[in-house]
Length: 144
Image (cartoon, rainbow, N blue to C red):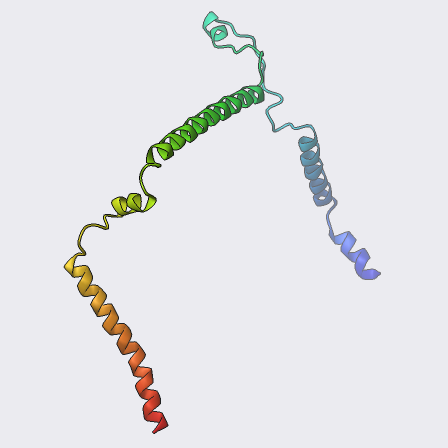
């Protein structure tokens, strides 16, 4: 108990009051939003140029954004519908062709294979054969 009383005596009352007042100031300041923009001056425009740019409060910003989103959605729906019609028309034109002929034309399957590609394919076959033969040879050697 003596320690507590000696500790209380050693603390200066000025420090306690200062800390209390500073914290109280911050709490009151945040409660009344002193640091925000509520207390800015709301002056009437003096010159005619200043009133020229004034926006009438007809629509809120949210309503304007909602209208833009609606317009964009309508445009997108129209584009998708038009593209769907184009795809149907192309499909109707291509019905006369065989699907396999279409693929053959697009992938250029009628052209001969490049010699470099043939050589690379043969090298891959040889490498694969070596990979398969090495473990088989090792198994035969172990079994002997």
